[in-house]
Image (cartoon, rainbow, N blue to C red; front, side, top):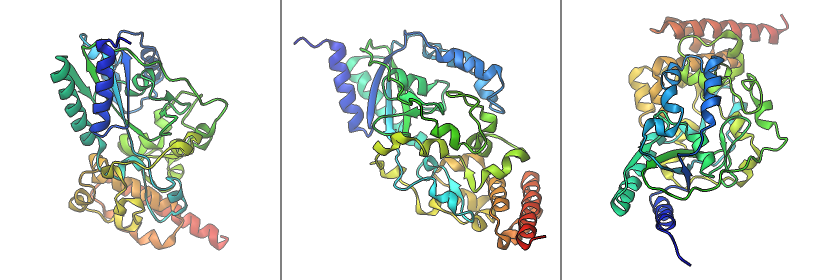
Length: 356
């Protein structure tokens, strides 16, 4: 059987991808139509991006992979499993502890993946004499639709990627190349009639299946949104202080998921179930020390402590009232506002408990 140069290159790239630490590798043509552009345009038209102005300002470059690099012919899409070793929803039953999204409990994946993408891209360039460019999700490329086209999984009703092999837990990266590589068939949608991800959302952030209104999403509100979180969503935060895993964790396809083989992505013990009382007392230096090498560090101390204080208000634990009182003198106005709300909520909870 004659093997084309394209197929030989695919096999070599897949082997090298696994050797440098990726768990899955797929290929897509970037000459193909890009229906994701129309979905993005509607998302922006409806204002569902909220404060994320950078999505709108980079919309033209997101419209098609070749908008970023006209000479690209193929995309090599890589996935790295970050499957957790415990149920991410269990922490929600411990209201005096902070719930940090699974992806942020270990090392910042951006640095890890970008380094390995560069290693792999360098190997491809040297072997095939091809031009290559690497992308992680800080670049204006829609990696989830690209991953679906490359057969890594499909975008579920919650708009996130779902894999038959890894469930909800894949970090994505991409290499655009001038090589003409045989594409993989796009992944088929296997959500069926399931609505688990839609029904579990605490703020009903999905106007319809396959549509997200980021303005109601707890991940957006705790990470991207600056200033006070709208009062209508504060109670729904519960003890979620950075991100939200509900729609990911409830997916039935996670029964096929496995714990990540990458030790750098395993949860740090200090971030599995940190005490809200300790987190609320963090100053700038202590915040930076605790979250060194973590994506949490990017949002800054004030933004993070704001989230913690809301969680204290939701705890129902009157023993945390002095912690909230201390934040009434915080340097950040938004934290002070959160402390006032938390104290009102705790007082109301205590009064109800007394039957008043």
